[in-house]
Structure formats: structure tokens, C-alpha cells
Amino acid sequence: MSHEPLRFADVKVGDALPPFDLKVTATTIIAGALASQDFMPAHHDRDFAAAQGAPNIFMNILTTNGYVARYVTDWAGSECMVKKIAVRLGIPVFPDQTMKFRGEVTSAKAEGDEGIVEVSLKATTDYGDHATGTAVLTLPLD
Image 1: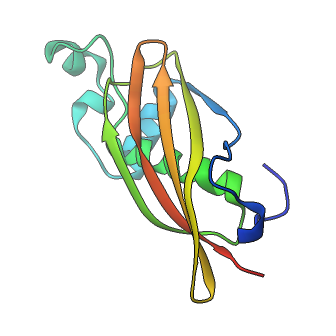
Image 2: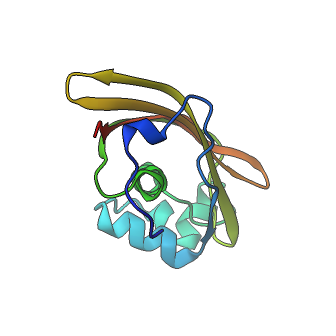
């Protein structure tokens, strides 16, 4: 996303974040697991995942958290600072699904020389909620 970084004055409670749809592939899942050094076979070995009862390999929590961070920073821009991400996992995400990220500003307050913004967010597939949670970030006041 190329836009001017958000300023605290640009944000209001109730603002919707732009949607972000991620086409999940086996490569997306495997690369995320490798990048986060999660070598559990269920994230890269289809036969192992099947032996555990899963229809295919599935995304790990660290990759999900990385995409949550991307979602909020793509919206907020280069001058934000992510302070906290709290995500609860729901259904697994498998290759050939689209994960749809949606979010809304739930809190915005000035503290000292920074604006603190909380966003509620959800990542869903056609089968339901993969991740629900919040992200807290700061934005410049000026």
C-alpha cells in the first residue's frame, strides 16, 4: 500500500481498515514456517499433516501474527509502531484458501507525545474465523 503515513488526527473510533485478502498457497505456509523456524512437520509435510487428521499442511501462529502485523502496518504506514498483537486462533488455514482480513478502530487516545490506537481485527476463510484479536499501535500526534 503506498500512501502517506497516518497521523493520530486522521483516525477515529469506528473507522474501518481497508480489506486485505491473502491467497494462501503451500509456499506461503511453508515459507512462513521456515522464516519463523517452526519445523513442525504439519507445516510442510502433507503426509504428516494427514496422519494427524488434517486434510493438508496448515499455517502456523507466527505466520498468522506476521500477516496481522502487515495488515495493520499497511494501513497505518511507516511511522506507526506496533506495541501489541493479541490473537486467538480458530480454524486452521490450508493451501488454496483466501484469508480475508478486516478490522476497525476501537480506541484512540493521546498519551504524552504519541497517539495510542487499538484495532479489533479478524482473519476469516470460507470456513470461518481463523484469527480474531486486537493490535495496539502508536501514531505520531503531529
